[in-house]
Amino acid sequence: MAKLTIRIDLTPTHAIGPGKIQLLELIERTGSISAAGRAMTMSYRRAWLLIEELNRAFTGRVVMASPGGRAGGGAKLTPTGRKLVRHYRAMEKTTQRVLARHLAALDRASTPRKKSTRS
Image 1 (tube, rainbow, N blue to C red):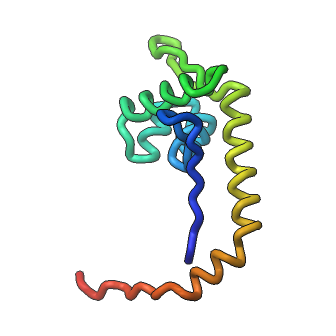
Image 2: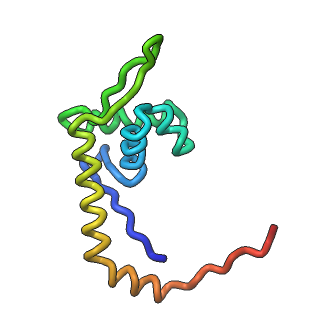
């Protein structure tokens, strides 16, 4: 099935796409950068670098993290982060709806892939 993926280039060095949005959603759900990274089979370092990139890309921080320790750490989305996710998902839905017939036409015209019979 034809699928559309949205990547938004904010500047020549900052972009946002489905992976970063999924990371933000998982941070919101788990309250943890490391747990969100693990859910995406991503190292903590990689997840942290992506969050830092997002925090630099916007005027307000997207994620606030608290250091671990005896009381435990954690992370949560800021209002800016929640708005970012909401706007991205709304753009995704709108784009899918507007382009549905074009995606269906591409899907009908594409060659179906055969399942591999090798084990």
